[in-house]
Image 1 (cartoon, one colour):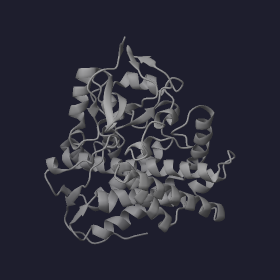
Image 2 (cartoon, rainbow, N blue to C red; image 1 turned 120 degrees about the vertical axis):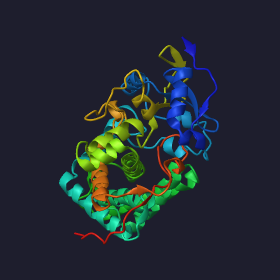
Image 3 (spheres, rainbow, N blue to C red; image 1 turned 90 degrees about the vertical axis):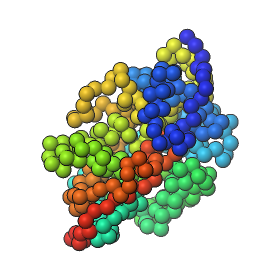
Image 4 (tube, helix red, strand yellow; image 1 turned 60 degrees about the vertical axis):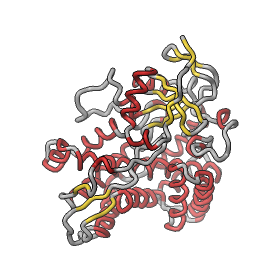
Length: 399
């Protein structure tokens, strides 16, 4: 048994973002399943890169609770990762009975979504966005398609007015990118309080209203943070899942040929992305309240333990030969904090990809693949842009 030692690996650099899988391999070779890392300058953490170790931790909320309050007491307010990690009254950052209470309200809000109706919503949004650039012969599929699609679909599900949604999007962008994150956090909270007041005054058949009227009786402050969780999960990761799947389809002949030719489905491509390049590559954060022993290593108290879904999914001790029909990845998490909306995320991403490929089957990258730039940051796997070209086509009929 030993204390965790070694030089900490920075996870916030452009070099890490450019080739994280090389870094994960080097981490595993040097440290084994538990790696000393820095999430931001001066913010130490342990990154879990072993699949079986991760599953044990995710299913052990008593020793590895998700409440960060003791940790964040020593973190400066301008720390770029604090908004992503700090305590909030939501299911993501609580344990025990409070976690259960928040999760029940969120699950009930999501359970009322009509999947058939959601598919129609995604189709309508997708067609409208495709029509905005199909005659140009080129587009940036991050800016022009994946981001606005995820954003508009989520706002429809929540019943969020356009002006409130725009402010929320600006706040979340700053939080995810770690640039002006403190200001972004304030923008977000203000927007979601406005949405909460709007839903109290104008209830409707939407997710926000169902959560607000759940028997748990959430306060305005609690409601704001449930909405923040939904925005956090429903825009950036959804956008990245769509974009990373399109990258695979554009670059990999196995999938480009088969997805368009019929032997493998878009769902298979989504699953390969969820194994290799999940939209949240490193997350599922816990904060042990006391010194804890795992894999013959003592981890310190009140220091973040971060699950690398990307590294765990590619752990050679569990890696299988293929992805078709394989759902054993950790991209949605496991245990009490597993994502309650994975089926919705699959549906949205699959419909978004299929609509685009049906409308523009001859998509090609506009730059060589090595010139694609990945956004730095410890948590996400996200392209800055996905420029493509295609034969200009007339607009599609809109419903």
